[in-house]
Image 1: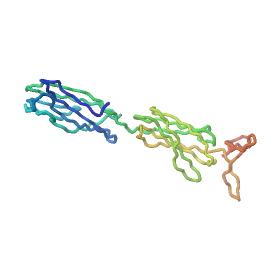
Image 2: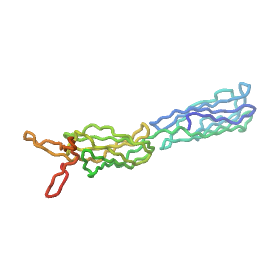
Image 3: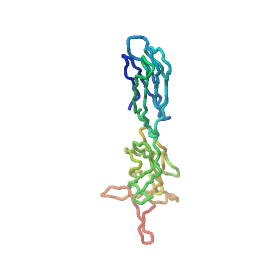
Image 4: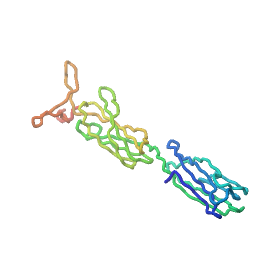
Amino acid sequence: MALSGSVSTNKYDGRYIKLAWTATQSVANNTSTIKWTLSAVGGNVKWYKTGPVTCVINGQTVYSSSSRVSMYAGTISSGTLTIAHDTNGSKSFSVSISAAIYTSAVNCTGSGSFALDKIPRTPSAPSTVTATAGNGNYVSIGDTATIKWSGASGVITGYEVQYRWYRKGAWESWSSSKTVTTTSTSGSSTQGVTSTAAFAGDKLQFRVRAMNGSLASGWVTSNTLTVVGGMRIKVNGAWEQGLAFVNVNGTWKRAQHVFIKVNGVWEESV
């Protein structure tokens, strides 16, 4: 792949035609703009007679002279040509030159093909993102949530995963979780549920976006997970969210799961 190159015809009496080019690229437009210069080269004289001269870049004629003229050494013509890349950001193009040097019929030709640097493209977002825990849509502090996604498309180098909590009646800001490096259109990640500020009834949500280097798709948000395992206690006449602690080998630790017996069946407390 390249952003510059050149093509020359074969020589006649030491003289030939050369096209040199450089390219700049637009990521936003998915295009390359070719800046080209066509020159007469060689020989010890300032000019020489030439017949038809034609230069074609990417199928487009950028220079054409049909009459026999005095061709001076140096620049014949120059200009720019913008080329659209394929949808995946890649593009190859060809160059051809034909010239009649010292004659009226074409006797010198040259051609070449070039692959331009691939332009990174923004990938499409996953079509689905789901979050599950040990109890499906319910999660206890200390559990691990699994986030899965699928349906992304395009050139992908990885995914970014974020999470947020719903506490005290409002969603909090998104927090970065992790980056998953993969070229697959689907994937998964895990997140430990370790917040000491979360209570039963609070919610947890995730979102995922596909990445291609610094280019990112839109975010896709998962379903919500509801925290279970706490309890409510009455404080000064009002019910408040409480935490359960157990003594383990002489050390008080926060309980991850609290069960109560309902109609003879043990169920996890919310």
